[in-house]
Length: 120
Image 1 (tube, helix red, strand yellow):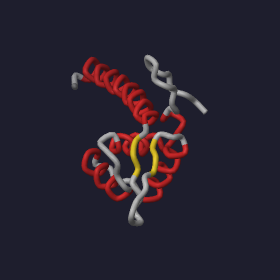
Image 2 (tube, helix red, strand yellow):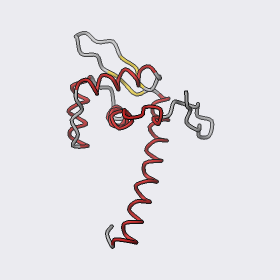
Image 3 (spheres, helix red, strand yellow):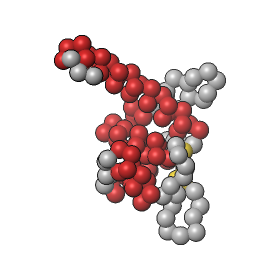
Image 4 (spheres, helix red, strand yellow):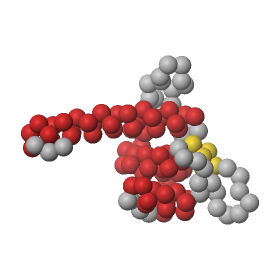
């Protein structure tokens, strides 16, 4: 299992890069859970609102299963059939590292566009 580089005393955690085609949904789910615990439907609605993306149920629950399996999120007890999930400390570290990398890529792409295409 690949590990993300730990930052200043933080424990190493799984990298979202190990998710392959599920890295996009994983990023969206972790970003939503960074605000607080949510169940599947609430995650779907939040992600639709902030990203304009609707995750299909199969994609959502496969990503949730993978995230939980790697310890990036955890399921919480529930009084009804809806199971809420919350971000773990390892999940927060992995999300921060992944978003930092994505920011570098986005910044580079925007600089190159501005330099070569006159856009920002």
